[in-house]
Length: 431
Image (cartoon, rainbow, N blue to C red):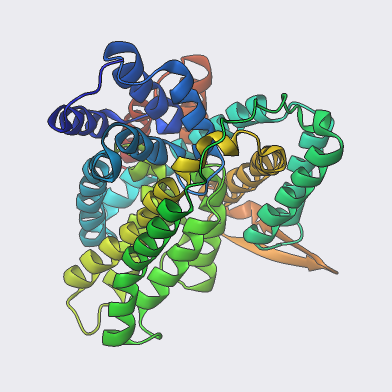
């Protein structure tokens, strides 16, 4: 293995950031090809161990893997460079698209365009659900956990963090007493005796926590806790801590809070934002920036709408991704010891199974809001069930969703071509 110079790391990290389409699976494969196969900067075993660590942490695993690669090759300086360059290209693109969306929303042609995009996103989310289920649900306990998570969210309207916590506790217990119920492998060999890196971790937590909190403190002092910017920062900071299992896992929770609790945007606009995020490089969780932009754009005082939107987008991106650097810089020195954490692995396996139920809930939630113009929430005792008004079925969305599903599942098209065809279809059917 040959260590690159810092300038080489920066150049390759920028290339990865600009080409990282295709969600976490495609991004992880791209980094493996660029870093391990073509340049030999890291070994296969190192890369896989680091990927295992990133799966244990909240937040986008591909983003955290990029930070770890930079940290391993050039310390904190390398981690900052690789992590920032992984995010910045996609952040700039989705910011430009969010600005366009804010200005053009309400125009007939724009609504027709996004009718097709929303229908395609529904098919994309179903594809993600099937892929995740095939990979994660290996045992009866894991399948039962997924079903319980779906029922808890869709039928009982339980909070998403509570579902994640319950699954994690179940997994830790199963790992301690019946690890085969979670298809866990043998514990890794003990690491060599070496001093525990408490000092590195403490410094990373203090510095990372200060960086994470700095813009929130500025907002609090300047605008107070009732301003929309404080609400945006507080909500997405909380979301960053419970984002296990990838972006799809928290999208339904984020959408329900942003739409139902805060009223920042509509359910259809949430689907539009996911469609935009699917077309840009970088982590899919970048859709949070779209939500933060619109929330501030629509409640701009004392700023102009554009300035408020830019601040909201920047704040959202900051509190979403700053924790990723904190987790890696604090825990990367412990990587070998974490390989032995059987209970932690069990908790993650159960959370991953629960995420299948969470994404199923997201699929159904999107389906109801894309295919039907109106819905209602029916309460039966403790049950809280969302049901559509059947007479409000949008036949155009149904046709476009079917077309997108055929292109994805039968023709094996990629996400971006499907989104493009569906957008044109929305224009045609609305003409």
